Length: 237
Image (spheres, one colour):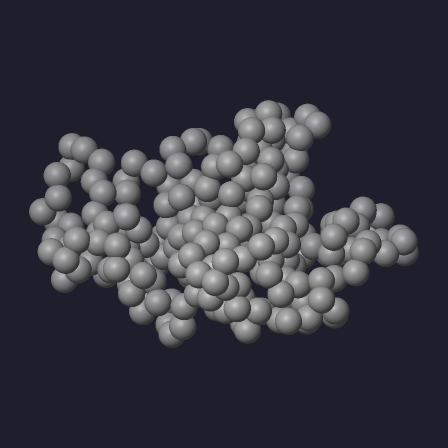
């Protein structure tokens, strides 16, 4: 894939933090001990891949008429993302990562719920350092009105939100939230802040901050709380 000089900054960051090793070898012909199939790119047995997923909270039920399966998405530096993906009929949902000038993007390469339709953005990734709270606030503050910065803070999302145990949101501090109207859905703290009309939140893993926007749908093609990054080094063990 061609990368312009502006895009190289993110690609280089991934190579630095993840690995500069070559991609994992093709799937092994050795049968899996649990009888499951191997994922084609990483060669990991599906049963083992399920055990590697970062289940943040209770496992979600799959969309009606579908079941969950593990899928994989290649990342720069020989790394891969593993995640629960919907399997509906003959379609299996799959994510695609692409680099941008200032960030990376996870989008749907295949949507099992949309009969194969593609393109919707699932998450945006930003290279970041420091504690999750500081990294997230720095990114969110850069995209919010100056008048809101003093009103906002980063906090952990309650588990009952369905986003996992490591999810965060950028919301008004309590004294400002108390003044918000209760008869409508509020959107505060800018583009990457809490939008009560959409399922959006932050996660931090693999030395990157990820902003997920799952939209307004009741069911999702992937379970974002399970997305787990394996480096090239991880795949050798």
